[in-house]
Amino acid sequence: MMTWYSYLYMFTVWVIITGLNIYCFYRVLTSKNIITHDDEEENNEG
Amino acid sequence: MRRGPVKELGWGSRFGLIMAMAGNAVGLGNFLRFPGQAAPYGGAFMVPYFLALILIGIPLAWIEWSIGRRGGAYKHGTTPGMFYRLWKHPISKYLGIFGILLPAMVGVYYIYIESWALGYAWQMATGMLRGKHTYEEMKASFGSYVGTANAGLISFSSVSYSFFIIAFLINIFVLGRGIAKGIEIVAKYCMPVLIVLGMILAVRVLTLPPRGENQTVSHGLAQIWRLSPQDFQTLMRPHVWIAATGQIFFTLSVGLGMVHTYASYLKKKHDLTLNGLTACATNEFVEVVLGGSIVIPAAVIFFGVERAREIVAMDGTFAIGFYALPLIFEQIPYGEIFGVMWFFLLFLAGLTSSMAMFTPLLVFLEDELQIDRRVGVLLVAFFAFIMMQPVILFQHHKVLDELDYWMGTFGLVLFVAIETVVFSWIFGVDKGWEELHLGAELKIPRIYYYIMKYVTPVFAVGLVVWFCYDGLLEKITMKNVASEDVPYIWLARIMILLMASFLMWGVWYAWQTHPKFFEDEEDTKSENSDDIKTIEDALS
Image (cartoon, rainbow over all chains, first blue to last red):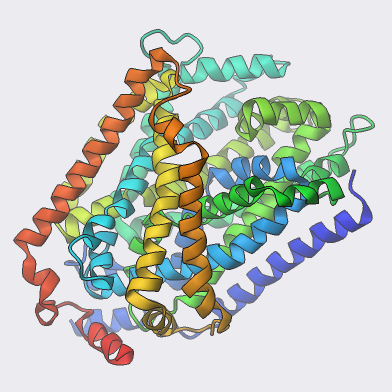
């Protein structure tokens, strides 16, 4: 049976992991560093 | 692969890269292995688990991304060439063989296991599992499905073999399409679908009504999250630390050579730190939040705490996934839909991992042996198919288990130790740290410099020592193997040795026939040659 502090423990871990995901994906998706950007340029040049 | 148009060589998008890396990490183990490892120790397990993630797992992922990108700049897509660029010693390229051998040999049995999930999704959809009311009946049904129930000389079932063929062809098709058009597209669509399916199933399980005094969601979650002094006393035992670290290795798919190959398609201006952390974070969400909320809670609600523990102890959490959950889904409204979702989820988790497993071998054939891509795909498919037959037909003689121990367990730990020592101590953390930060969008805290220098390699080497102490000799001498299984265990070992011998010959041949490619960097003309110069300028 889960006690209140077990729930607190579980939700803390969930929040940290979910928060880390939101932070990382926010940084990735708002970044101007797009992997294929330069490759396409090189392709066109070639 | 590196000789065609640039766009076809690498990743099509950053999101696709992260999804492919995360998909490589997210596998059957996230849903089936993790709960089984955590449940015996309750919430105490999470302490070593997260310490291992922070001190070993994430640094290892960054190390592998760095090794991969650096190798790719020299046109090496696999670890023999990558290790040689880190350490110009005759033996380094042979140590790198593990990065091709391990994923290929794991793939030999992993695709077969993955096909079970596809077959069970079909069986749930068509109602073929109806009419089985007990755990024992469902277990017997699984034995019939895989052909072990009535095995004589061989274990064979036409149904499971048909689904194996389908799963195998899907994997080869994706492999044949290449990185951007195959692996990336599958990962980009399958990973979000997998996460949505996992969330739906987790919500369904966590909202199941109680079935008895000790059969509630709360009792189910307590198996993984309870905080009791008795559980925390288990932290004094090394086994829990080994189990947690092992789980981190398995779940992040580090020590298998696949991350290296995927990262080899990046250029020095491409970020490693943020991408690597994002892939790890995605995997942790799927494992801890979703994987921890489905199998064990569902089993406790339907069987009770004691019976669920008994099943895990007797048959493992794999049994809950394949024997118990279909039974449970039979008893809830719209259960067949949830059943199909569950097995399709497992199949997608397996597919996103398995499609990476033969990539290093294929890339090795192309990059180092200069074999045409289409011929390479056919060769990989042919030899993989041949190697898979003993796994399927002699499954009842533990061929699969033997491969899993040497390739998926001990080999993985050994390769992690080798790569961390090569990267951190031989190549040097100073150069490695700079390499990691080229193009980085996330500045890693300086403490990780010391973690990579001391903690990660020492822990990795320590783990190898522990494995050697903890039953390696018994494993080598087949101490607990039944006499009728001994020839088949040897067969599994011969398969490993044959593959290792081929790779050793391949490395020797490549270095003999194209010595300039490996020695004279100025002659290495590629779209990345400018990158090499920039990297070396930065490092000097």
